[in-house]
Image 1 (tube, rainbow, N blue to C red):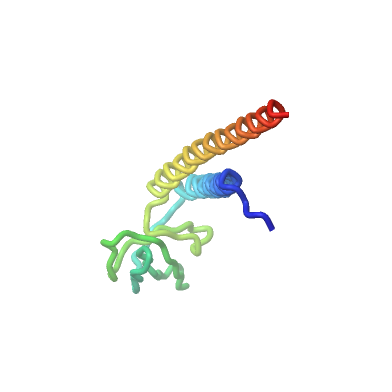
Image 2: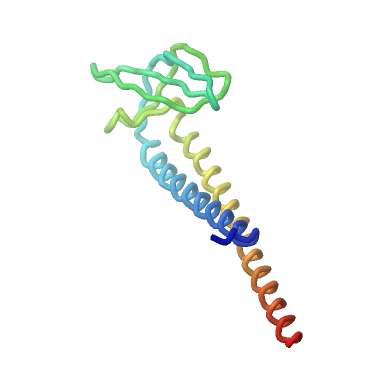
Length: 150
């Protein structure tokens, strides 16, 4: 099988990146909608971060009790997170939906990430359009050269 030329590989790579960044933006949009819905009714309770895993990032695992039932959650955090008692924010209609960040603040962060994904999508779409245009110009100049040689 013939090896893919570099322009085709570039276009495939840009296309994959574009699809991923659009997917990221859509996912963040849904998170923003969820955060906006929960923020006015959120409640908080004292809970415990019982484990922080330091791997590629930092993941805090926590638990809290609400109305006699224990709930667990995990969240990506910064390097300053430690094992300790902390405030957990949750949706009182569904306490399994919870976070270490107030939903109002979480909404702002998710909103920013949504826009960054959008900017990345626009940049990748422009690069992809340029790669397609470059391919078309290269192809037409090759055809012109071969017809002039005939």
